[in-house]
Length: 113
Length: 117
Image 1 (spheres, rainbow over the protein chains, first blue to last red):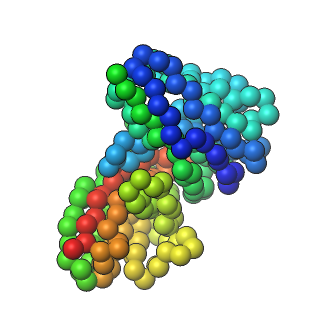
Image 2: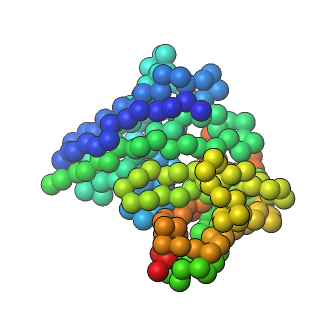
Image 3: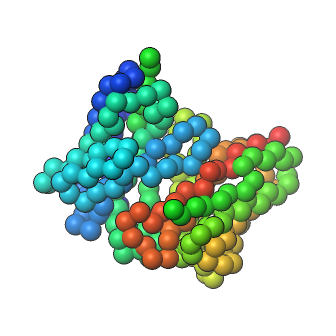
């Protein structure tokens, strides 16, 4: 599984756009990039997933450059409730078969008023 | 959407006793379930991978005789912490992979806070 590197922490204010970048230099051809959000004492929650270019859903956007060696999670207009740990994971999630997800350190996002 | 139920959400037990944690996929069949442990302010650490009807695969450093995993059906996996000690106190999280696999086929339970006194 490709190793990921992301900032340990980030601070922001309500209403701002937050971009969290993840490096995954050894990403494999079959690997997808998935981001999860975790609140204290809860299990991780799926945010967004992509393979290349840009993906957008109702909560976030994911930007992936052509070489796929990094990705950026973009949270538009964050609120206090977005304070959480965000994990970037890279792996082959398409073929099933029990491919395990390995979590890196994650990024602790703190949103203030 | 896919839902994974984990029970109990928290448990306190005496040192030396055993505790069982259940992980159920409520609306889908899970070929594979994963068990994680998370200490305060740390990331999730994969403990083991369990497949229905077969023995679990443990990560290096995880004692298989201490953390017993049973995956009896496509919707239920259990983790039993045997002879628990205070250092086993942690947040345990399960994850289930949908039988069809797919890009968003991993769903996590809400976690179990184990405190051993």
